[in-house]
Length: 245
Ligand SMILES: NC(=O)c1ccc[n+]([C@@H]2O[C@H](COP(=O)([O-])OP(=O)(O)OC[C@H]3O[C@@H](n4cnc5c(N)ncnc54)[C@H](O)[C@@H]3O)[C@@H](O)[C@H]2O)c1
Image (cartoon, rainbow, N blue to C red):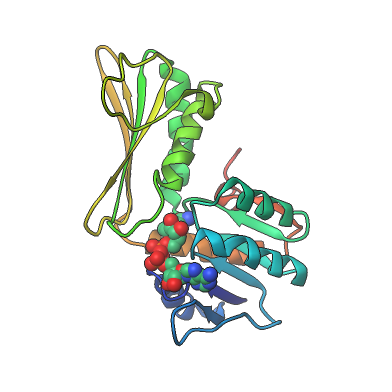
């Protein structure tokens, strides 16, 4: 399978190139980045593009892939609503896999969090806490948003109606049903997420800690092999893993 890596000079891009080059079933046909010494575009023979770059790069590149009929794997997070709409529109023409987290563990966590939220109910206050390295540009993380959405789905509510992004000052008592997200930044942390369900007499915490970017890169490469040649549509990592949805 011929794969192009977009954002190849970055933290994720370098890991993707390393793993892909070690995989006999994959050929890296382009290492694309705006950094000096990298490719500017992918060749026509490309079968899948894997994008771990910056949010502004995603829409123009996926539209180019859609015009060429090339599968696209979106790992980049922090897209604006307008950028996301352009990604979604391309899914009518090509297979698009998009996940804020390509690790097996976090995709399992989505099920656990949804179930915990449904079973525990609004008497247990939900707080999502994430920590990443000091270079991360968007907050809260895409993964924290996915986990918060899974919790909201377990309660049959929309995250937008109950979300609280950090607290400061005289905020008053915590409203029942609120789902709060908090972003910590520092050092070299690859990605930690905890979803806390705090009740009157007990507290349940569900935690995932990525120990290496390999957890995400291996999943994204698997997604690219899965997507190439598939029917156009919008897919996520749970489709790739064959989880019930
Ligand atoms: N979905 C997941 O599993 C997952 C996991 C980790 C990181 N991420 C996301 O992936 C993205 C990259 O993360 P990172 O830590 O590797 O960042 P990074 O800053 O180390 O790397 C990004 C790279 O993209 C390049 N880039 C920027 N604009 C570009 C453009 N227009 N064209 C080509 N290349 C361009 C930069 O030069 C840089 O080399 C972030 O959005 C991050 O949140 C997603």
